[in-house]
Image 1 (cartoon, helix red, strand yellow):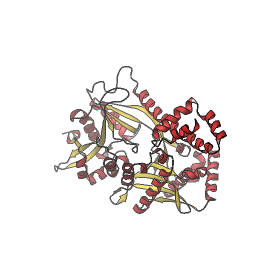
Image 2 (cartoon, helix red, strand yellow):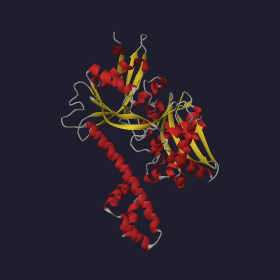
Image 3 (tube, rainbow, N blue to C red):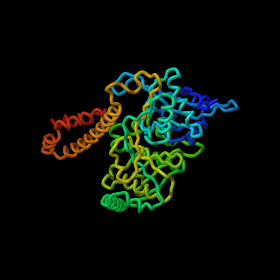
Image 4 (cartoon, rainbow, N blue to C red):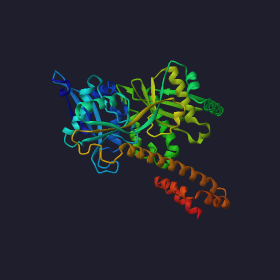
Length: 441
C-alpha cells in the first residue's frame, strides 16, 4: 500500500489539542520547515487569549504498523467569506497580528504523504473550503517547493500571489566587524557608531542576551513597559492596552517546551534600566525576531538601532543561530539597512480539484489584488504615523501662544493633513485630536 494512503487528516476541536501534548512539540522540532508561530505554546496562547474561536486545527496522522497514530502534519485554519472583493469561501492559514508566517508544520520524514493528506482533506472533509491561502510563506522554501510538486501530481493548483523581500541576517565565518564593513554603507555605519558613543555618554550602557526562564520573563516585562510608553500605547495597539493581548504576550513569549523557554530576548540597558528590548522565537538554528521596542524619550540616541548593532555583534561572536528572520510583512523596515540578506515571501494559494473557479477567474489579477491589499495596509500605517507627528507638533506649538496656534492652523490644516488626521483620530478613541482641532478654530 502506498505511503500516502497511510496518512489521514482530521480536524481537531480546540478542546482536543491538549491531548496532542509532546507529539506537537516533536512535530515542530522535526518539521521540514521551521515555524515557531505554529508551535504549541504560541497557538494555544492565541486560542485562549485572543478570542480565536473560529480557528480549526487540521492535523495529519500517520498510521503506524503497531496501530498507533503519529502526528505528522498540523495547519491551523480560519474561514473567511470575502477575499479580493469576491464573495467566496476561503480557508486562511491562521494568523493574528502577531503571526508573521502561515507555513504548516510537516514532518520531514513523511513530507509528501503528509502534504497530500492535507491537500486532499480540503476536498474530503466536511466544512472545509476548496481554496486555501497560506500567508507569508517562503517562495523558495521546502514547503512551497513540495506544495508545487504535489499539487501538480494530485491535480490541485498551487501558486503565489503577491511577494515581499523579507530581510534576513545569515551568520558567516567572518567577524562582525568584517560583516558590518561589507554590508552597511560607510556613512551609515559611522553615524551608528557615533550614536552609540553618544548614548554611552549618558550613563552605563549594557547589553545582554537573555535565554534563561527568569531572565526572559523579566525582559518580557521590560518590553511590555517600554512598548506601552510609546506610540503604540498612545494608539491603543500595545500589548498592555488590552487584557487579552497582555495575557497572550505573557503566555506566548513566556511559554516553554520541555522546560526550555521558546523565546529569548536581547536587552539594552542604561544605568541598569532597560531602554530597548527585542523578543525572538528560536527553533533549530533560526532565530525569528518578532518584536522590538525602545524608549522613545531617548529617540535622539537611537537605542533600537544601537541594540540591533549589538545583536549583530553577539550573533557573530556567540553563534547562537545560523540565521535571523526579521518577520516583517511590509516593505521598508529599518532593519534592511543592517541586514544584507533577503528571502522572498508571498501568499501561497491552493485550490483543490473541482473547486469552483479555484483561484482563477477571468480578468481577476490575484497577484495584483494581494499587492494592492498590502500597499493599502502600509499606506494606512504611514498616514497614522504622519498624523501622530502632526499632533505632537500641534501640542508643542499650542503651548507657544496665540501666534503659534494661528501659524499652525495655516500650515497644517491642508487637505492631505486632514485626511491623515481622520485616520489618526479613528485609531484614537480618546478623541485627543478632535480636542486639539476644536481648540484651534
